[in-house]
Image (cartoon, rainbow over all chains, first blue to last red; front, top):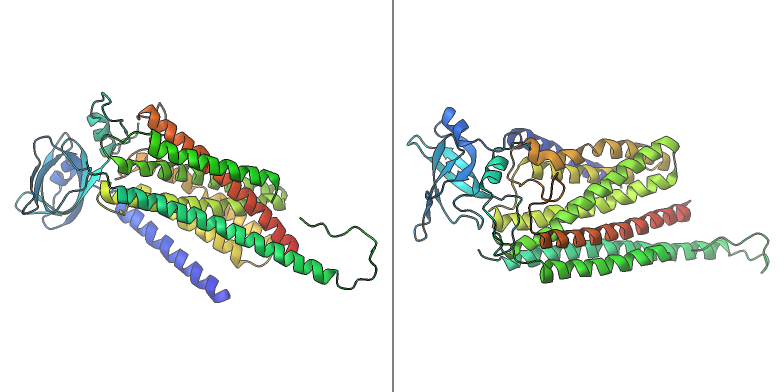
Length: 144
Length: 61
Length: 218
């Protein structure tokens, strides 16, 4: 019985340590913005980059799975290349977070594409504008 | 936009499983406690000194 | 089973049925996400009820340390257990929703990290209670942990404001009216009420069982 508690306690302590470590190293700055990446990009270094998928920048080749788009934050833009199928919510004029490395050739090579969702929910046919500004604000992580 | 109904069903199914599981756990605990109380009561009443023993009986729920 | 418990149980059952009807029959298909958004009717009420449960742990722990009332300790114990169940549902449904919409089951953003820390802390709380054999000591230690652990509740809720996250900001618990169609809000509220009733039922039952347990093993 004692042994069971010791093991349980150790598992919980380890899990907490790992989560706090992950929180400090990853969650504190979950992603950098295009402007921040542009300011201090190191080729070959891994980043998580967050921004808006610029309108008209998205090109997807379903046969080769080549995905090209540009992420912007209102100040700077970063071209992104990826091979694969994007998640359902991914699209132009919406937020996205990509994981990958900065290439010396001047683009971001993404290994994972994540779509960022807004806190807005709309019924179909509801006359509502895309919350572009709202999304951009949440992307920048600004409080209200 | 694909609907991903399988994900919806998985989420609701899992929630039902977890809530149902916890409920069953409470019901099992309740049954065990009732059985245990009955057994305790039986052993406590073992030395039947008199059918009309003085003092109030042990309250049962 | 007491009559109050039975009534709560039936109300919770009715509420959950109404919640399912609202979630699948009344609420429309969301325009951007499609039907996968319906997971929200589990995900959001689950975390709100978990906040409530851990808030009750906090208050009951303070009351216990104040006057050493055994009833407050039992309430804290029961509420923590039920809170862990609802936090688990929140995390699991969030992962299932995240895969098709975000493109991942899991990521270490501040919201997901803080909520999993909350989950593990309260698991530790329950383990601590089970570990210490002396009833009085267990209750005292648990009460202190129950108060300290509550610090993580605002951390979870405000994480989406304080840090850059993948998770979106709250829709319901925020200043101003929710940026969502009223039918969605109504469906969420019905499910929230149902989950609260279920919380009440589970907690009342658990408190009574804890008391009976103490009487049997006394």
